[in-house]
Length: 307
Image (tube, rainbow, N blue to C red):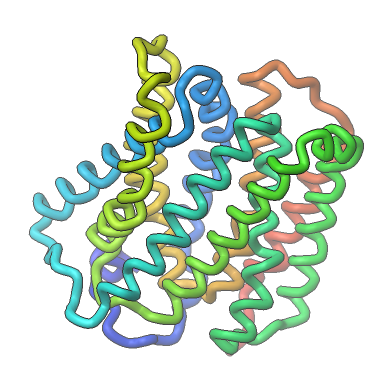
């Protein structure tokens, strides 16, 4: 697969392509960059309020994506008849996911938030089977079981601590469901746009409520922040909101929705270990056991199958 392949507009619901070295490379980068972002966001939220932080990230990400689209002369217009589709996709993928997960993160430690957020495949796999008619193979079910077992091991003794903030848990689980719904809608409606402007418009449409709520709810908390929140916002706007969102949308287009969702199971493991390094948490046996379980799960999920 080449970059030209993934930048071509998708006009119809074409059958998903196989797992290639290109998609595996995107997945590896996505896993690393999204995984280390959880402690990075936690550091930012110690000073910067949720809507303000996300408005900066979404605004910067949208500007970056549209700049790339203009430089590469990609068509920017939303195709006729797809504005409503784009709006619903954006509300789930951008508004719902970002608002719910960041409020949850502000109430919970970064490592635990990552674990809860990436229960997303648990919701996505049955949704993709019901709405997209994707086949639930034995390998996929085994991978889902092992991956979820890894997340359960990660939760382990943290359950009581998480239950001390039940609203935070509920918010993050709601964010995971929003992400799953947004992924299914992306696959179901197949908006015929190239990935770069497609993601840029999601950030604009999904960001509208966030852009309005930031000054409305948080104006009294605007002041001169220290360097780290600004560095976090810059990392999110450039790496996470330009590259990672683009890469995720490419993967959703070229892989079955269930497999693209299950392939994210390594991200919470990266999130937990990076939280240890950045936030000083101590590694314990559950983290290593979960790493083994999730790595095995990925091996099963990404196992080539005969057509």
